[in-house]
Image (cartoon, rainbow, N blue to C red; front, side, top):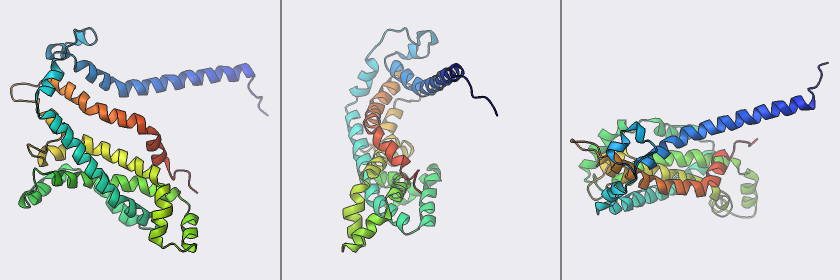
Length: 281
């Protein structure tokens, strides 16, 4: 029979574990936060200082990059375009994805759900040429409609993935009790399950909005002069004669701040929605 470790040995091992855990957390935070810090610092530097390693932290800050960004009167228009496209793409994706996720979960449509999720795996660049051809023949290239439809191709699988797990965590007895009380299946879904699924719907909506807001490739090819969103608008600072790194960093900060705010205030819903169904059964 092996002897149990002495209390001081357990305390010593606990301290080692705490130090190791703190070091690993600090390492992960450092890896993820370093590019963000570099981007913010670079947005206050000149192009010369950005490329000078010695001026990584010691430099004379300037607001000229932000002036260059907002000097373009159309930049606020690009912000509006991003909000408009992301909001409508998210809303329509949820309208389609919520009942679809419920049906696929409750009626065992696993293969159909897998086909929809496979659409998320297909590289978007493979679809750009046929999409451009089809939408150009329909006269939709450069409109909000084509941007919303292209973003929905990504957002609907995301909504399905989140909501199917959430509906799986809801007990079927609630729905059966509602049917016994006289509600139709649609009534049980609308009055009982849908209110309970609001945290999952919020999670799917937040993730969908973030994916749509950050989408670059579809907007670069399918948007027009008046419908351009923020990601391709930042790309405008890349020209044949050179790259305005300071303006790119300033524009990236402006584009990133809303997403950071949304993520910070909604992290509780994101975690609860993504972990729903993990402990079921």
